Image (cartoon, rainbow, N blue to C red; front, side, top):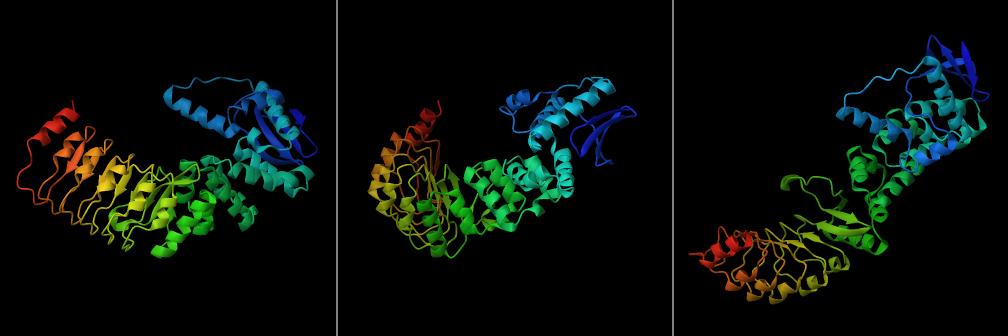
Length: 381
């Protein structure tokens, strides 16, 4: 039997061709995998490309999905010494849990802390925080399922969740929401963590105005159907880029929205809005304006001043006439005017060379102009 002492608590033994871990003389676990053999300096180089051994293991799993794995027969003694080397590197680096797989590092660290190991006691909670706030879904799930998050106070957990929100990673945000981590924070805390202070204040003011919570939605999250839809905003780099106030009983477009200088999409469907105020011109980056199912009767002549606008949805309103200036909206790709009271469309629409969709169904137009088909033929060739 071969034996290797890592420190005063941990000993590895080669027994029946298997490497077993003993803690204070008691069997603890079996080392099952050899992922890599690296020195301390080499491991630091590896961690510049990956965050942890968990990443390496996951990457290996994905690579095995693409190619047929080859069995590498490592002699038990060689395997034993590789495990000893890896375990020693882990201990010498103050039990850095990135250097071992989570399903070994955290149970072992917990056991050492229980045995009054001074380093383990000092770093145990710090390692839980560090690995949770890494945003790696497999590690976060491991920590949660195995009860390690219970070692953090509610305030400590909220702080780590807020850090993840502040980073603005959309996939991580979706993971936090789907796994109910966001339930630990109030909506105000989420808003303040996700946005610059001045825009957070605007969203919170809008919440008071509509008397509803406005949720932070990941850009990777699929929209709910209209039946289950709720007010939400999207953000990138701590600025609001999308805002949806669907069915919020609005009588007018709130002026404070113009403070969202990087806003690209504004959805205000199914409200009671009757006019489009000129202050909307201040939204220089607006690419999509959705005002379907409102009470709009007239479109302003200055609408073409929305120079970035590509998508304009105005179906189910009371519009009777389109301004000739609409032909100056050179970037417009989609213009939905279904279910209005139009009797004709201005010939200036012929100038919309990027137009790909024009909705005119359920209006009072008797005959469509011949140039309309020519327009779409030109735009699609």
